[in-house]
Image (cartoon, rainbow, N blue to C red; front, side, top):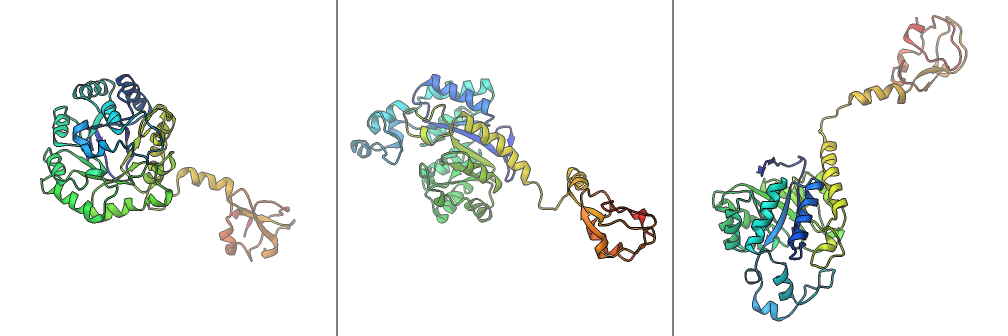
Length: 348
């Protein structure tokens, strides 16, 4: 499957998405700095979230004045105040897309309504990301699927039946460009709840490429997902984990993101082949690290070798230990001293 200019498939170098989301805090200067940094880290794309105060949350939820207390940070105000400050206006979408195009990194976003999906389509985004919360929003899934672009579908909170229903909804619109993202929609999840083995399970169950949308703290878990063949890593991104806002504390900073990009490539390369291959470098290493047959004592020409006459020491440049049975019982052609390395020409 193609995401922008990149061919993406399981067990390939992962396509890394810096999930800025709402971490720009409504500040376009900060947003541009984050895009610049993500590009410097080697990310393939930056992702935002496309919602408005009206498209995401109902009046009843606002009236509770809740602040999503499962988030590790305290926030500056009510939920309604935060949503009002953090959402991206249409002109800000276009401004950030233009900036991404200028510096050479893909712009993408998660639409939370049909109108926002249409806005992203007008901006010619290369693919769509569907949030875990909308995996059962079949109306939105069908609408996005009809745009016939790749869809990255997060599976947090979903049962297998719900994932299957979502996949069938997308396919029913003639769109088979699906990447499933294993996801745990807790910020951050407990390690025992991450279940990275869901990655090969989802691949085997649905037959689509599978990536990982990560909400853990640090870099070890997304890199572990690469060893299981993740084709995409989506990781929240910040310039400063101490900034106010929903996701900064569980986000990767530039140093961590750079490591995820670099080491993700290294892990992918290191997976190699299931076929057992001894490299040229290892073949050369045998000469230093393996052993050869060595004499334990001074021996005269004509002596017939027995088990007590030999031992095995480095280097591995002459007769190897597994050739012992072809040595015992044979005569020496010349006098040899203790600790001499035995050679085939020393034997009758």
